[in-house]
Image (cartoon, rainbow, N blue to C red):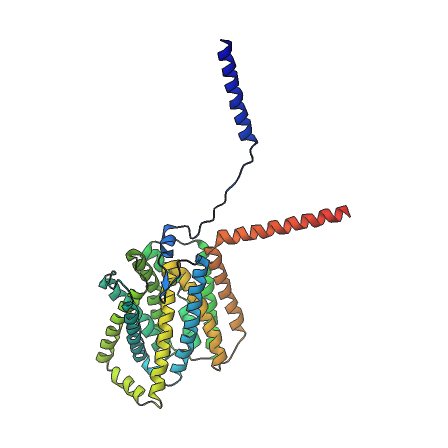
Length: 385
């Protein structure tokens, strides 16, 4: 009896000791920072290849910087050559330039696809026919609008597609965006519109036909990003296949349109009888290959980071293109460009903050904590003195 009572008391003592130890043990908080977070992001990181180089081993931030750098490099050259071409008398032949561009894009796509082990088409032709039509509308109408608008005004209009992209994301993919995303897009668009108004006062080359053409191109371009993103993620394809089929089918669309409209022969005759045909087609080649490499990086951005972030990057690139346009090609300047550009930068900041809200808030809190700690130490030192 005494033995059982002793065992029971001993057991209770052990339990109480363990409980006291657990209570006395300091609590540890584990903070886990997710990289990308969603299943879609983790899928996007797999098999991320651009220009034959795998980016899988790189951190997600480095992947973004590589894609962003490629977009800026090739599209800045693309914009410079485009303005140069239209200053050589090509303004009435925008659709012919688009035809040459699509032909070269299709050839580049075939060459790149030939290095792939799996050459089978996975995305339906119906999807590609829609993508081709939208791509033709975007690039053809954009090139043709330069016959009526000056280059910076055209670029400004193209930058205003952020809101249509968000609307397309909601309608096509059922996405939801935070209010700050809408504020960012509105801020960027308002800033760019004010920039356009400033440009129209100092360079009154404003034509309603050009506005209609670039506006239609804008709407088509807004839809493209969402359709591409949905198709790439649904069929788990890389960016090579959409480029080949979209531009190959698009070439057929433009060729048929030029033949029936009678615009093919005059444009071909103009380029053949130019002062330097080699220069004319050489510029078209540089224009096309830099555009092709640029679109490859854009499609990689769309697949890995989504349409909205890709559009934000391309919008920033267009702003830099405009600055370089003023530097390399003589144009009048007004102070309104500066403050309207500041509104655009505010929109870009808000969009970046929206995408990295947790990380930015954590960094701000960390810096604030460091500042308060140092301030407290200085106060204690002053009191001791």
